[in-house]
Amino acid sequence: MSSEEQPLIAEGRRLVERAAAGGVAARLFGGIAIWLRASKETRAALGRSYPDIDLVAHRKGSRRLRELLEEEGYEPERVFNATHGARRLLFHADAGHQVDVFLDRFEMSHELDLGARLEAEPLTLPAAELLLAKLQVAEINRKDLTDAAMLLLDHEPGPDGGEGRLELPALGAACGDDWGLFTTVTDNLGKVEELRGELPLAAPAAARLGERIAAVRDSLEAAPKSLSWRMRAKVGRKVRWYETPEEVER
Image (cartoon, rainbow, N blue to C red):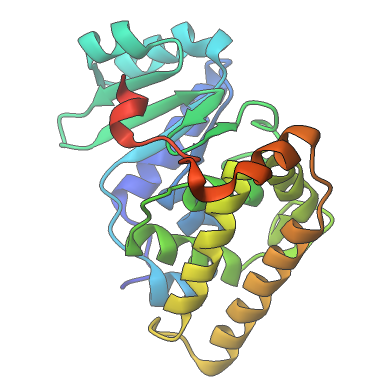
């Protein structure tokens, strides 16, 4: 895969900048955000085509963001936006791609608070939130596992966030309060490890990925757990701990 910036990645960057100029905080997340944070080598090895743009914004600024996207030529999905507009918005471009906007929260297999640290970094969500968004998928596919590997390759787990860093306390706080999220994330870290040997990586990069998977898993195991986490852990896997896509849509 080429490490050159695809047109849709450039468009995602432009939309974040356009929103900022219009007084709205918006950040990229998903595959495009991970690509933007990756090194040239990692992009070449694990990058892929990105068909859509994913953004996160604050709910309180959603009206102005709607206006800005329409000014930029994006057509709103009016029925969807009327139904789900308190938490999610969809827009379509004449070029064929879609802009998916999540407002403060991300609800898929699990619910994540993305608004609390939305403005921590200038272009994308922090690496911790990007990793959680990928690994919270209960029925995860190879694409999401590869995206998670791509992020881990270029982010050193540690106490702080920022460029090239993965903030372990943020991961631990989210997973330490929700046994279901913890279980899905740690299960999926194991699947990234299983995939590691199949990825087109040089030996040093593959070794680094393995070390970082282990560091994240160890940190999540050691993180403090809430009372609700411990109570739910007693029930364990006897009761399903995640939502399905159909349930989320309802």
